[in-house]
Length: 134
Image (cartoon, rainbow, N blue to C red):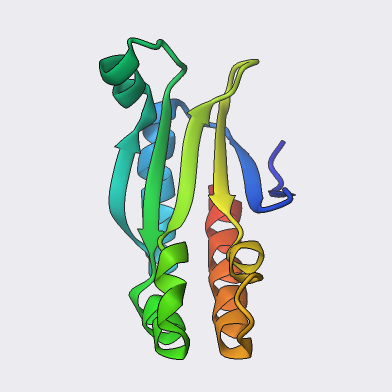
């Protein structure tokens, strides 16, 4: 499946590459859209070290586009509670690698501010382009 699937609060795409290569590729395509990776949470390693759980490879990348974040925060400082945009790379139960990204329009939909919604639409378009480029 090479298309981007709309989820209730996110976007999903199958990756044709392996886990490590997908993380590198996701980071690169997000950078092309103006996003930097602020955080990397290795869920597999964290759950193993904290509770001894063995789970499939799973990483959460905290992606931020500084220009869009600045505009959103300028419109409503409380938006910071919804930042950064999380992008997940994980091994699917049936095999293969999945990339899932938070849909900024869905996340920011709780904010009653038209300026924030405009920024969220721009962020969604950029994330969608990044996923399509994988």
